[in-house]
Amino acid sequence: MRKGIIALLVVALLAPAVVFAGGSREAAPATVDTVEVLHWWTSGGEAAALNVLKNNLEAEGIEWIDSPIAGGGGTQAMTVLRSRATAGDPPAAVQMLGFDIKDWAEMGLLANLNELAEAENWDAVVPDALKEFSKYDGNWIAAPVNVHSTNWVWSNAALLDELGLDIPQTWDEYIAAMDAAQEAGYIGLAHGGQAWQDATVFDGVLLSTGGPEFYQRAMIDLDDAALRSDTMLKVFQRMDQLRGYLDPNFSGRDWNLASAMVIEGDALFQMMGDWAKGEFLNAGMEAGKDFYGIRTPGSQGSVTFNSDQFVMFEVAPQYRGAQSLMASAVMDPDFQIAFNTVKGSVPARTDVSDAQFESIGRQAMADLAEANRNGTLFGSMAHRHANPASVMEAMYDVITAHFNGQITSEAAVSAIADAVTQAR
Ligand code: GAL
Image (tube, rainbow, N blue to C red):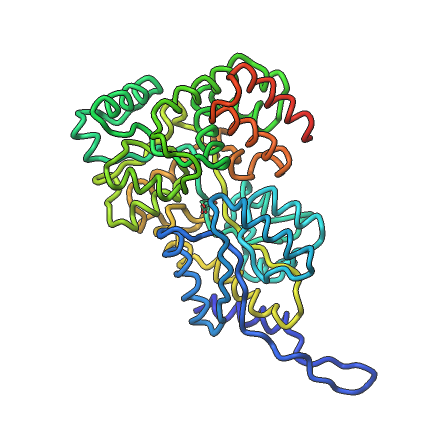
């Protein structure tokens, strides 16, 4: 209720009802009660979560104009956004990640959300790790809707049971479990061969192999010695090892179809961010009973995160009211619970209770808080939170070429270091 009043107040502040020009009184263009939202949430779990936001906005009288761009991780969505912006026709609201937000802010194309942020006291409730991307030059330019993390392995509980396996805690146990699955005629690892998915797996393997300090040096600081190290070689060798557990049809497969293979019990594991949990939940499975989510074995205690945020592009003034209502709806604490319990992520606000989350969601919230305290919380390389897109894409190219067997692990080590040097 309080929230609605604040939002209306901000709309009133932002929407210029009347323009005085040269003493004559002209009506401003009528306020537009629509908001076009560009996003890449097209899987079953994602669409179910997005509907929560759509319905909330429609209840406030804002019509939602849906612009979905299929393609996990947002690669295709960002390509479409670039061409729309170049043509001078950006959507009013856009789902965006990490360093991309900084890039668009630097170009001066994003609306300033300070007034709303101040009225709703966002500063007090959004953690610093997210503010790093929600604010630019001290100004609010994005409303964070969630926190995901990428170092997860998803598994089918019945299949683990059938194979007589415990949940793996170490890399060796993890590999042994996939061996057992393969021997019994199942697929060890469900995967979709798309660059961003390969990179998501790489995030977890690197964290597990090198530990948090190595993730910091190699992925965040881009330290050349770390990128060329024996540890990096081991990371690529482990990627090679994982390739041995895929089915022959992995190439180009969408991530949610890989999740479905675990849901159906055809494959034992999937290494994917916790948006995959949204698929398990959407299929009616119960967390901790029908499926498990564990940290990539060996990476326990550390978290690689990404946060979906909504930015508002500077469009005509008559759209500002609807944009403001949308940003306000995104930050609403009750909405953040309703949305994130479906999406598989956790709230972007620190003042929201975990009571309505299932066991893995509560664990995710605890993990994030602990990693934040211990300095083992890192922006995900694969999901645009470690480096600008140019560096990330340079890494993607090498990781994917290697994962597809086009270059050896030794060659991949020098290639990734060289590519990073060039992209910086
Ligand atoms: C991530 C995004 C998630 C999820 C995933 C798959 O980049 O943060 O919300 O949708 O891509 O599309």
